[in-house]
Amino acid sequence: MVALSDVSKWYHGQSRIFERVNFEMKKGDFLYLVGGTGAGKSSLLRMIATEEAPTSGQISLFGYSLSSVSGSTLRAIRQSIGYIPQGIRLIPDLTVFDNVALSLSLSGERVLSASSKAKISDLLNRLGLESKREKLAVTLSGGEAQRVAVARALVRSPELIIADEPTGSQDRDYTWSLMDLFLKANVGGAAVILATHDREIVRRVRKKCAVLKKGHVTLEEAACIY
Image 1 (cartoon, rainbow, N blue to C red):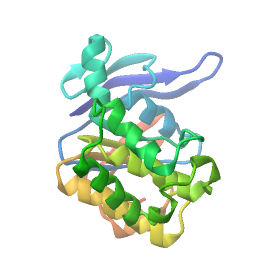
Image 2: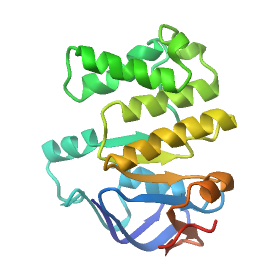
Image 3: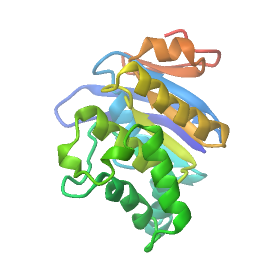
């Protein structure tokens, strides 16, 4: 599902962020991405999410090399990804409900079905946002906006979930509500790659991880000991 081959990344005027990264993820995998601040976790996730290209090396998603994929196939790949960046990117003058619904509209559902509306309501309820559904996104707290971003990413039942510090602005109750949703999606077959600094999550939800340190990735195939 996800394959990185000799992937390196650097920005103009900077040293390499990482070098010759190699790893694979299969359907149903759950992988933590851990490492210190500035290690390059967000850069790596942006590349897997197709928002940036590697400086060298190859990234393949769903069996397609991103360096040679057609425009139509790339759009289909993106519709199969639920990406939760650190920069939340809600549309401020849309309501909470409409921000989540927009994800379905962009994937081709021009008119929301009753089941889609029910799914949005269920997600908002699980995330403590049902009372905020008609509030404009600009009025939300940082934690609320982050949860809306998670709902927006999950509402399409993506095959690949890419989450960059998705619990960073949450209290403990909502942290576990979010983790429950990621784990439920994973049990349903979605692959999940989740960047986190939260050691309690890693200790309590035992999964394998990729450790990004000094420009290199080390895979821990057993439960992560971060």
